[in-house]
Structures are given as C-alpha cells and as structure tokens.
Image 1 (cartoon, rainbow, N blue to C red):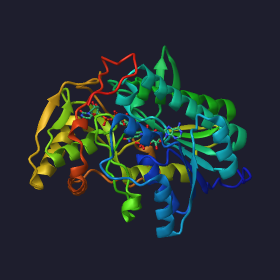
Image 2: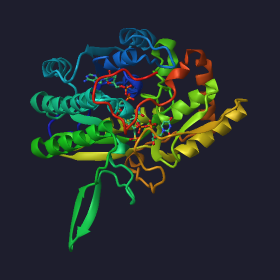
Image 3: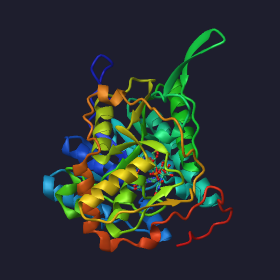
Length: 404
Ligand code: NAD
Ligand code: USQ
C-alpha cells in the first residue's frame, strides 16, 4: 500500500472479518493490544443461528457494541465496527474504502460441519456464504487495495485423512519420470469442509492471475476460551460452544465432564485431528500478518500444535476431571458422521514455528482451568443440546427444525 517496492511492507491496519465470533473476537483484541489499528466486520449471523436453533454459548456474551466500548474504556484503544454481510459487495466496498486495510483476516464464514449437513438449504447456504464471501474479499483487494495481504482461515479438514504424511499445502510428486510440486490433494468430508477447499482454489487462482498476496491458515480444532485480553473483563468474555452443532471436541468434553454427562466419543474414537489452544490461534494470526506473503504468493500454513485422537482427548479429560473430584464416564455414540474411525495421521506443522510460534501445549493446568471454567457456568448448560442431532447419512432435503 503506501510503500515503494524497496521498502519492507509493514501492515498497520487490520480488518478482522468475523470479528464477533470465537476466533475473531479473541484475535481482534489481541491485535488491538499489539498496536494494530483494527476494524471488525461481521453480520452477526452466528448470533442468529444460535437463536434459530435454540442454542447458547456456555458463557454469557455481551453485544459487539458493548464489547468494543468496554475494550475502549479499559485500554483507551478504539476498534472500528462495520456491521454487514461480506456477500454484499457494495457493503464490502464501503468498508474497504473507509478503513483501507493493509491486511484482512477472514474468519467470517459458516464454520460448523454439522450445520452444513442439516439439510439442503443449510448446505447451500454454507457454500454460498463461504465461497462468495471469500470471492468478494478477493475482488475488493484487487479493486481497492492490491497490496493488502489476505490471511484466510482454512481448515486441516481440507486434507481429510490420507494414508500418507500431510504436507503444508504442497507436495512434490514424481510421476512417470517427471517431477512437480503440486497442491496437496484435498479430501474434505462435509459440505462445510468442502467450502474451504473451494475457497483455497479461488485464492490460489487469484494469487496467480492478479498477484494477490495470501496466506491460507489450515487451522486444526481450537480449544480453550480465555486469552489475556478476553479475561480482562466479563464484558469481553468469549463465546464457548458446547452443543452438538457448534461445539467442538475438547471444549465439549470439558462441559460434559462438568455437568456429569458422559463424554460423547463418536464411533471407535480413533479419529485423529490437529488441535490448538485459542491463545495460539491469536499468536499464529499475528505472526502471519507481521510476516506477509509476497505479492502473487499463495502461502499455506498448517495451524495446529498437537495431534490427538478423540479417545485420547476423552482419556485426558477423564483424568483431569477425576483429580477435581468429578465422576467422568465415556459412552460410544453411533457416529453421526461419515469419517474414518481408525486411520494413519501425521501432519506437518513447522512453518508457523519457524516464524516464531511458541505453542501453549495441552497441559494438566489448562485442562484444570477449562474444567473449572465449565463448572463455574454449569447452571447455564442445556443438557438437551449435548447429543448430536445431525446425521451425515440422513441429510434432509427440506428445511426443518433440528430435533432437540
Ligand atoms: P464463529 O461462528 O464463532 O465466528 C464466525 C463469525 O463470522 C461470526 O461472528 C459470524 O457472524 C461471522 N460471519 C459469518 N458469515 C459472515 C458474512 N457473510 N459476513 C460477515 N460476517 C460473517 O466461528 P469461529 O469458530 O470463530 O471460526 C472462525 C473461522 O476459523 C472460520 O472460518 C472457521 O472455519 C475457522 N476455523 C475454526 C476452528 C474452530 O475450532 N473454531 C478451527 C479451524 C478453523
Ligand atoms: N467428535 C466426537 N465427539 C464429539 C464431537 C466430535 O467424537 O462430541 C469427533 C468428530 O466425529 C470428529 C472430531 O471429533 O472426528 C472433530 O470434530 P469437531 O466437531 O471437534 O471438529 P470439526 O467438525 O472437524 O470442526 C471444527 C470446527 C471447524 C474447523 C475444524 C478444524 O468447527 O470450523 O474447520 O474443527 S479440522 O477438524 O481440523 O478440520
């Protein structure tokens, strides 16, 4: 933007799309604390999904306006707010012209695999919202801010569970005597995870065609809730999803242990994924912004710190819960998903560490504090929302309400 090609590109103004959500809110505060000028763009659709499906965060969360004014009163730092849908290109154009971002961190998608498998309208909505939103961001960068660095949240689930090691974005293959470095094969297994694959292809193409600079962060499953900034005041607390649609594995298990619900291992429990602490999500995004991709570069990082199977997570939560005097049991739930339940998994994740990531590995003390946090709010838990209600095999063709 503002620099000649000989000067290093120093991003200062960061637009956080999806900044009212779980990862986005924590990241917006972290970047603001670090001295970046931050704008949040969000259409608040996630709060609407909760109302529509009768779900709620474990933690009470303040309105985005109150969150931002609380941050201002505690730190003196302002965060700009643009409420709107990035699928609306006129709205996105106005935000780009008004805020003039050096970097855009794009968290603003429908991110639940089960939600995308409820019925045809939700499958279509997920792909439409995610793919078109990202396309609009790419066009906005091209039209109005061509030096702006796109930091896009992808997912480890784009790769699926191949029977070979997973590389970071690219694999070098020798075939019939010729060698090339090619995008790593994608084998996603929900309409949501597929939307991320489609995004990655569109971003890769526009890097080549238009010279866009982009980083695709293939993030693993995030756990935890507190970051230094969100812990400063109750009005800054982050959301904590534990229900069968938006809740993710480890966070769900902690809430289940806190309320005496058996831990819900789907199928054989050998499903292995990459995991990371939300404190590392904010660190990774900051590292990607501070070290931008070059113009025309489609850079891919695998953003997770450790691999666990679902059975291993259940065992960790069981031990940590017992130390706190909780009676933790585990049940096998018939797997509502179609996925490998026993498989090889070995995914590389060195590039963010090379940039300086200092991981917060899953420890007894973190599990302790997460369990204690869940216990503190256990009266807010609606146990009816814990069991999974969406089947990959029975995806509905008509709009219908999810059964409670
Ligand atoms: P979230 O649902 O808590 O937040 C997403 C936010 O984006 C919400 O506030 C929502 O209102 C907003 N949004 C959605 N569509 C929008 C649109 N069209 N215009 C404007 N705003 C829109 O989700 P999250 O857990 O914070 O995830 C953020 C991103 O990180 C997603 O892209 C997700 O795929 C990715 N990710 C999340 C995890 C995880 O474990 N939570 C893991 C890997 C990747
Ligand atoms: N699982 C259980 N029991 C549960 C919940 C989940 O056994 O109660 C299993 C699932 O079957 C799956 C694994 O745990 O094999 C992970 O499921 P999840 O719901 O924790 O995570 P997932 O659906 O993959 O999605 C989450 C986020 C998504 C992100 C993804 C990263 O919702 O936005 O993209 O994690 S990744 O898994 O690496 O693709």
